[in-house]
Length: 335
Image (cartoon, rainbow, N blue to C red; front, side, top):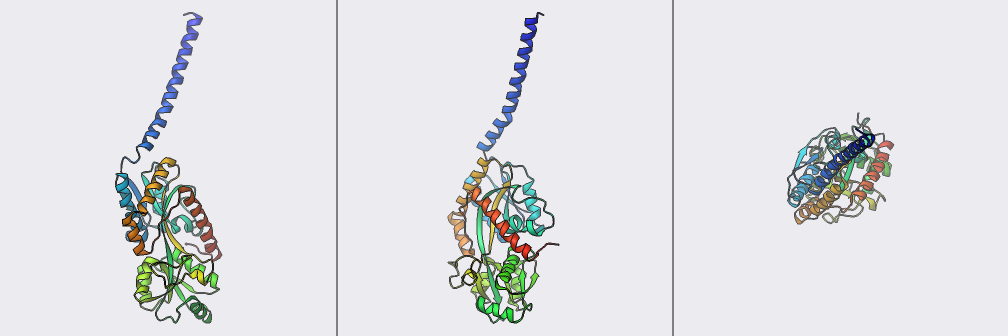
C-alpha cells in the first residue's frame, strides 16, 4: 500500500470514529428530548412523607386526582411517613429526575427540619426542584373553655400572672404548630410548657376535656370545635381575618408581624428537566384553581397559590431562614 493510500485510509477511519461518537452522543440527547416532549407517558408517583388522612395527604390526593385527568396519566399517592417527613422526602430526593417521582413537602419537611435535626439525609434547597406551592393554611390559637380569656390581651395577662403554669400542645417537636407557639411566647414575653402529642386529634381531645389550656393547630383541625363553641378561638395566624371566620381576629392585629402558616408544595428531584417542571407547575396550579378543588379548599380554610417555580424556590428559602431563626432562638432540637 502506498503512503498516499495509507494516509487516506487513516483519515477515513478517523472520520468514521468521529461520526460514530457524534451519533452516539446525539442519541441520548434526542432520546431525552423525546421523553420530555412526550411527558408524561406513564403513571406519576407522588410521595406524601406523612401518614394517610392528614392535611398533606388530603391536598396531595385532591390535586393529584385533578392533575391525573388533565395529564391523561394516573397520579398515584404513596404515603412514606417518618422522621417528621424526612424519610419520604429523602426517597423523592434520591429518585430519578425524570418527573415520574414527586413529593408533597411541607413547612416541616422542607423548611423547619434543617434547623432542628442534628443530621439531615438531604438538603431541602439543593436536592429538590420546587414545582408549585399547592396550598397554605393558617394555624389558629385556641383555648379550652375553662380558660378565662377571650382575646390575646387577656390570655397574655393570665400567662404573665402565673409564669410557667400554662401548658400548650403541639403535634410534635419542631412542627409548624409547635413553632407557632414558640413564636407567640417570644413575641409576648410569656412562658409556657410545651407538651408534644402524636396528632392533632389528641390535642383536641385533651383540650375538649379541659386538661390542656391552649394550643395552636391547623385551622381545618381546630376551627370546627371553635365554631361550635367547644373551644374558644383567640386568633388566626394569617395576616388578615379569614372569610370563613370573620369574627376571629388575626393575631397580627395585636402582635404586628405575627404570621404562622402551614403550607404544602410539590417538589421534584433536583435535575428534573426545566420543561417538565414548568409543565407540572402549569397543571398543578390549574388543578388548585379547578372548581372541585377550590370548593374543598374553601371548606377547610385552605388557600391556593399562583407561584412560579422560581417564586416557590424563593418562598422556601425565606421560610427556612425565618423558622430556623425562631427554632435556634428557643434551642428547639429533635433528640
